[in-house]
Length: 188
Image (cartoon, rainbow, N blue to C red; front, side, top):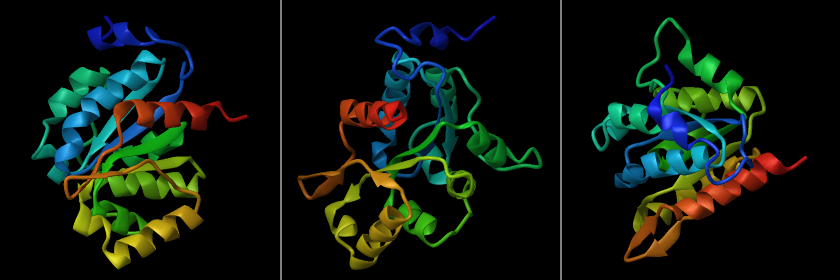
C-alpha cells in the first residue's frame, strides 16, 4: 500500500517527475511553511525526503513531515549513515528554512546536525544546494553571516530570498521556492 500523500504527486505538472529532493528543516519559526513547500514540490512530481534539526522539531513535529511527504523523516544520524544515503540519492538539497546558525555552520564545514551532515555530503558529491534564509533582519545583516553567505555563493550554493519586511528576513514565498527548484533541475 502506498502512502495517501503520494496521491498529489504530479497533480500540477511533471517538471520535477522522479526528482528526489532532500528538504532540510532548521529551527526557524518559518519551519511551519515546510510541509507546504514539500507538498507543492510533490504536486510537480518530486519525491521529498525530510531531514530536521532538533530545534526544527521544537517548532513542527517530524510526524507532520512524514504525513506531508509520505516518507520517514531523519531526525538523527545512526549507524545506518542516513546522511550518506539521502545526499547520494538526491537530485537537489533544499534547506528551507535556513537559519543564521545553520548557514554559518555549513560555511564553516561544521557537521553537528542531520541537516548540516547531509549538506556536507552533498558538497562532496557536487549536488545542487539551495538555501532559503529566514530570521530576524538584524541577524541577516550580521557582517559574519554576510561573509558566510558570500563564501557559500562562491562554493556554488544558491540562495532564495529572503523578503525583508517588518524587521524580519522572511522566508521566500512557496511559489518562488518551487519555481527556483524547477528551474534549477530543468537546466540541461
